[in-house]
Image (tube, rainbow, N blue to C red; front, side):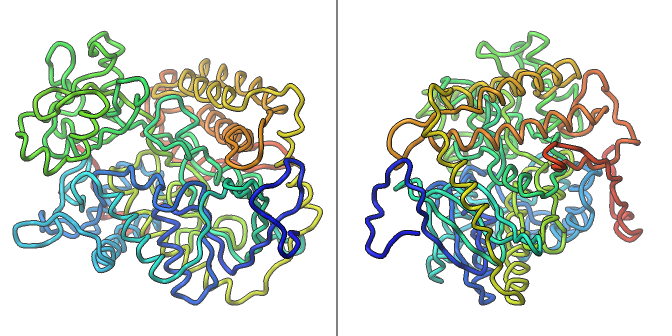
Length: 586
């Protein structure tokens, strides 16, 4: 422990002392899910603490641009939660947990109006209602938006609520593991490092909520922010929690092509929602071949595969993508509805999208799989460990509808915060085994004592290159097995990762610690992709091109005796009254 008055601003690389923080509910992550969980936990009387890897207000949620899906019916009065439920189940290819989808579709409406009461400034209809735009595979226009900066407004609004309540938070903290009580098996806390100073931190808590986001950075081309390295999924797995649907990685159809430094940066679906069209090098509006009914507003997996097919057939653009054009909508309309896209292309590519076409190609965008949770409480298979948002699985099945992610984090962030606070109030603070703490300290500090070890940044690059090459939009056993073999080589290389320099703001140190979770996530993705011998949603196998009814199952991944194993669990059918609501696509 730190002695009273001990200087904490600089620490020796071998210093094993740690600072201890105690709370009822520890929330790891300060995106939309984490912030909404914190508000709920605090409002229910729990001593709540939020920690996040980046700065407060800089979560990946800000990069969700197009809108929040909720069946308000402001633009299309026929919309309802029942239709939203059906769309979610159908586009998830029936792998979604039906109860999660029901809760989500019903409660998304209330969460949007709540966000408005908190101060979110939505775009408006002429009548003054929250405006709603079209998005791919939604039956009706239901994306509540603030131009193309919806995620930023969501974070700003929830952050204001957090600060107004005085909920304590510590940003720039990297959490490294979850502790469990050796007697009861339930969560006891977590361990981490203060990135600003290099200090070690022990968090003792009655409940822990993971809101750490996804793992897009395990791929070379991704719209995800730098922090999305799968930390929460890796920590949950190492603690003994179940993962589910890890093979389901969403490739967003439209990411930037150039310049190289921004390759993969998201081009929001709102561009297509506002009338943008896709053409190939021959000037053909090619979506008429793949989905003539919905065209550019087909499901994301369909549009991404269609673009991939056009590129592979030699009909791609000069930059290696396809063309996306919104210029016909006029400069004033574009600057009002898509201000971020206008600024993004002008600043990074010197392209004026009010006049010129954009070049786009698929980019890794979202992880439908993650930690398996209870639909009512968001509790994982570990007692008192909760997960909400992209780190959790169950809602989106094999393919996420655009806009469902922002309503997801609001609905299940609130539910996780409520359940954690309620359960924490009924128990005493559990104990953390001192031996486990010392073991984690040794692991965390080991990169500083690695002689001649590998450069962790290079290993991260190799991981991302391997996944992009072998586990892409279209997969086959030969490629997946090659990717798994390469992953084993990288795992060996990662055993001696080396951190250099002092502990404060040490990127080589945090990179070294992230590699373990990245390798875990990649193995789970590849093993699950090999297991699922069919094509369904975001998972396309060229050697098993058809959808097979016998694979209407969830693939569970868990650690047993130090090894990664999988279990097959049939998807449960919704009750008749919900089954009758599901309307299949033509």
